[in-house]
Amino acid sequence: VTVLGLESSCDDTAAAVVRGTSGKARILSSVVHGQDALHAGYGGVVPEIAARAHAEKLDLCVMRALAEAGVTLGDLDAVAVTAGPGLIGGVLAGVMCAKGICAATGLPLIGVNHLAGHALTPRLTDEVAWPYLVLLVSGGHCQFLIARGHDDFTRLGGTIDDAPGEAFDKVARLLGLPQPGGPAVESEARKGDPARFAFPRPLLDRPGCDLSFSGLKTALLRQRDLIVREKGGITRQDRADLCAGFQQAVADVLAEKSRRALAHYTALAPAAPIMAVAGGVAANGVIRAALKEACAGAGVEFLAPPLALCTDNAAMIAYAGIERHLAGAHDDMTLSARPRWPLDGRAPPMLGSGR
Ligand code: ATP
Ligand code: FE
Image (cartoon, rainbow, N blue to C red):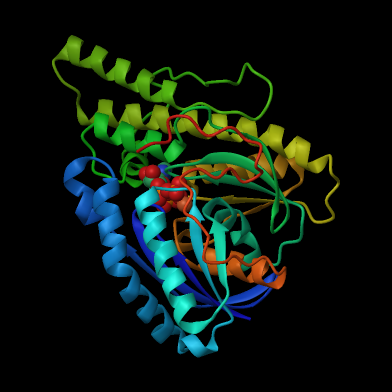
């Protein structure tokens, strides 16, 4: 089947066409239109500006995605759209656009959970069988999920405050580095000594897979202010050492919690055990290496999809749409946009995720 996917839950307007079946699909096109320049002067994503830009750019993205895929609306079997969680104005813009296309063409409408899109990406990029373990680490989310089916996820734990990407972004802001903070902090950290400053390893003393990152950001702020008070300012080396220490702490915590999640997962005795990462923070080399090592220790294959599919995109939404379409899970015109939508229906709404 061939599905058009739409994504507009944060600051990327995206449309994609994916063709195939459950577990075996091909991306025909994937258009992502970022909004970094629009939000650059505000130190974060401004929901109002994001929603307006999505509404303006969605049509164009859809037309480009169809053209690049070499298909017309008549070649499609369904339209899938992110229906949450995310910034409500943007999600609404996507849902309205998808409804418009479906109303005009009679195509089935499929609402997709953005997190399910991320969590199903390994099945789009590789042949991965259920159940597999996913670590979703992005600017807005951090959680361990066992994926047992396209609509069957078990959440093992997640952040109780900031998402790691959010922490990287805040750290960059504290140190005068550009946004998005992740790549900037990583590149500074390469020149730094991770052992010079002491950073905590939050929640390691507690059992389970929950994580916390806001304390790391506060620790960095304290160290920075201490240096400023002693020396009147921070040098490039101070900055690099702070970045390296912070990044190492994030990597260590993610690796240790991964070991615990892996223990839960391997207890299910999966035939071909796999842990996959999703989300923009998976781009980080030090974090990736730490996760890989944790997997190796548990005898589980580590899978990191290409970066363009780790960050927000519509191919993952189209693919999730294929899985739902084949399962007969369609929506109608009453589909609504949801700002919060936990994947397993049981998890409490995440704290401090507002950016
Ligand atoms: P969502 O949570 O809905 O996916 P998002 O758009 O913020 O929202 P992504 O696009 O997946 O998430 O990822 C962006 C985040 O990843 C940013 O917070 C960014 O700082 C972080 N990031 C990107 N590259 C790196 C890196 N090399 N190291 C650490 N963090 C990174
Ligand atoms: Fe995302």
